[in-house]
Amino acid sequence: MGSPNNLWCYGVPGSGKTVLASIAVDDLRQKASMRDRIGIAVIYCEWKRRELSSATNLLASLWQQISRSKPLSKEIKDLYKRHDQFSTLATYDEVRLILKREIESLSSVYIVIDALDELNDENSWAGSLASALHEFTQSSATRMHILATSRSQQSSLEDHSLLEITAKGEDIELFATHAISQGLCSSRALSDKIRTDDQISERILLRIRQKARGLFLLARLFIQSLRQKTNIRDLLDAVESAPSSINDFYAETLERIKQQNPDHRKLAWRLLSWIAHAVRPLTTQELRHALAVRQGDETIDIERLDAEDLFVVCCHGLVAIEKATQCIRLVHYTVQQYLDDHQEELFPNAQADIFRTCMTYISFKEFHQGRCSFETFDPAKFNEVANGKRIAKKRFLPNRLANFPFFRYAASSWG
Image (cartoon, rainbow, N blue to C red; front, top):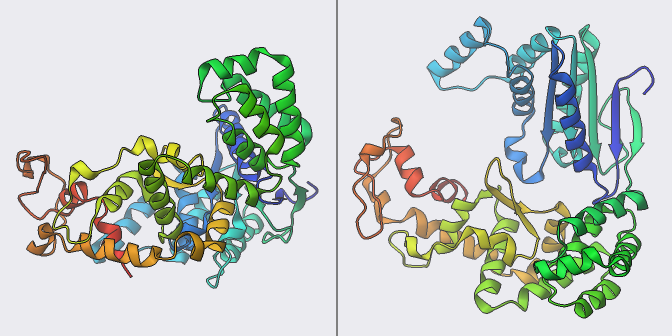
């Protein structure tokens, strides 16, 4: 990579940049476990989390990851006590300084930043982050290695090498071969037939390779479109007639959603509307409560909470649930772009529905008691279960959030 140790990876949507970043992080962590004084950190940027992705928060995240295995220094403890005393947050300069000192205590630091271009907005947080990293590189003897991915070839990093990310035909074929080996269809018998019939599997692999056009996302959508097929003839017809563009795949997937039974169709449509229009990613529990609300409700009806294991199934692969956070999100930002482009047609009343739901939720009778204290969660403060509902005896905020997980979102984002 020449004199700099920075690598800027760019590519079109769906080319596999995020997967590449994840593989790089896993590989670094495996190798670093055998060596001392190596720091590794990763940031996965997402436009819906931009309100949480200030330059200060991003630098704090890097510090937390790099220093994870080390005891807290007196400087950090003093900084915490000072801000805790006045209920304030550490400033950008304070966080930048502690991160700089942490980096200087290491021999090498590896930082991976995925989708850095999704931070670009009026706050210029991507530029502030890149500027701070450049400062650390120039002022420290520590070897800094930065890998960033973006849709744009224009880099925010100083001194860097460029690498275009594009999937080769062999990569797509390996991806599809693995999918076939794991079971291409929901039907085990049909999956076994495909797996053991070389003629059928080779035909599928050829079409996926041709249709994907160097995009892992298209290959993934192609494979997802075959999962619900019930016989070989329908599957092969679908293979031959599969769309050749991402937007056509999304349009076809929405048509399949519309053809589900009425309950699944309604659930999928409401899920997609909420996920596409919420100001931040929602957890499955937050969404279950939001979807259970009906205008005029005075409390949550737990018997109306939808089964969360249906969320991904009824949306035909357009959504995914993050294991670590239990947030449910669209599988790719191009899904968001497609839904935004067709918002008037698909979800003309989305914002009004969200507003009514939030206002109904924060008007529940349990909240008429007034504001909460901030005492520690105590399960003993709950009443016994009565008529299937649990109501906290006292107004402890953790208790309230445990009983009403959608409360925080409804109270802060109803407008």
